[in-house]
Picture (cartoon, helix red, strand yellow):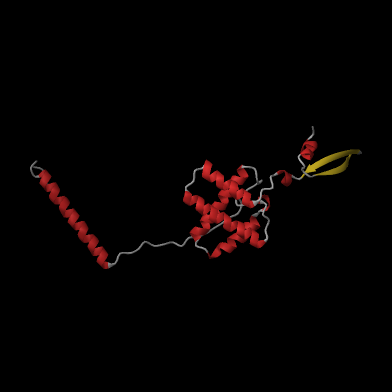
Length: 186
């Protein structure tokens, strides 16, 4: 059985093309490879990914909760914008639009949502539901503001110094009590 007959039995659309090579007619069958990939709907992909994370990876309930929230939010975004719900049709432009919509969120939240999408698309690529992860070539720079440590006020620093002096004096008294009977003093 030739390749084209095999895919015709699987109801995969093919296109026959003819060309002339050195006066000999040759017929080629081009298969639409996107049709060969499973046309997985995003919500089905979410369910499959969620089950994988829950049963195979044994992720915590809290992680699963946030994965669900993040993926449902992305799914709602796709529906709202009228973007395709087929996983294989989601590309960088859809993800860039989603990131623009997330611009009002805190940087840590945006990073978590992007990490969730990366995990989903990595899984879908591994399971051969998509050809390539659309997030792989997308450069995302999300800067978190640098937070300075809380400074101590004068009263707190004085209290800290007093406690350290008490500890130091106690240590000196203890070591003197131990070494004095031995005749070792410094």
